[in-house]
Every structure is written in structure tokens, then in C-alpha cells.
Length: 175
Image (cartoon, rainbow, N blue to C red; front, side):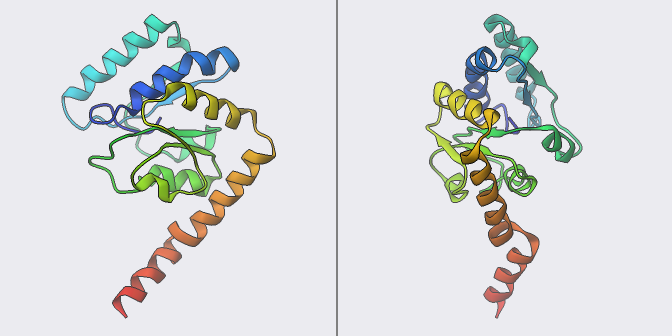
């Protein structure tokens, strides 16, 4: 979960999915890579850590805070889930989503808002931890549909989000 801790309910939704993910794929680990935007973020993270312990899934969760770069984490990931229902303080399509597409990772995103422009992702209703767990488990298990979604995601990246594609659109606007 490469989202935030304070505005969106995405981190809470992610945590609510962990027990089901862990039950079905015990070796799975969920990494919360969250930048602290304000002083309140520390308290929000502490509540999530306490809840992970209460749910019995603390061993399946990693709270790594802000990372200097996400590429190494994405290289080790099998799926990226960003069930954010509010993108306050982020661009319409967060860079981590674009980086995940480029890296060939399947995505699970919250339905509604600008994230739906990433048409190759799986979508869940905001706050629906059960559906999130289902999609993440399917992605972790792999198979032809996941490979097809990844290939489509990489094609979407090249056509829409790659630097050359973005530059061409800017040139067209200026012309």
C-alpha cells in the first residue's frame, strides 16, 4: 500500500484485507510505504500497527514509512494495491501507479475518481476490504488473466504515461 495515512481510508481498507490475504496466502506480506504528510500521520500509523497486532496479522505487515525511492520495493512486489478513496495531496494518477504499470505489476485500485483512467487495473469499491483481499489473492496466484492485465498495463504505460507519450501530448497542446 503506497498511499497515505491521514485523508483516505485506503490504509484502513488495506489493513482490513490482510487477515483474509494471510489466511489464503500465509507467505504474503503487505508493505505500507506511507509518507508522513503531517504530524497526525504518526498517530494514524500507530493506530494501524496496534490494529494489525489486535487482528493477529502484525507479522504479515510491514510499516516502512517514506522511502527515498519506490523502485526497489516495486521490484520485490507481486501486486500493488492503492484502494485510496481520496487523492488529496497527490496527482490524479499517483506516480507509484505509473511506476507499477511500467514495472509490470498488477494493480488493485479504488473505484471512482481519476484512478479509473488506469483501465487495466482491478477495481474495488472504496472501503471494501473483502473485495480488495479477493483481488490481491487472485493477483498473487497469477495465471493467464493476471499476465494479460500486466501486459495491457505495460501497453497503457507506453501509450499514455511514458515520458515520450506525455511529451508528445504537450507538444500537440502547444502547437
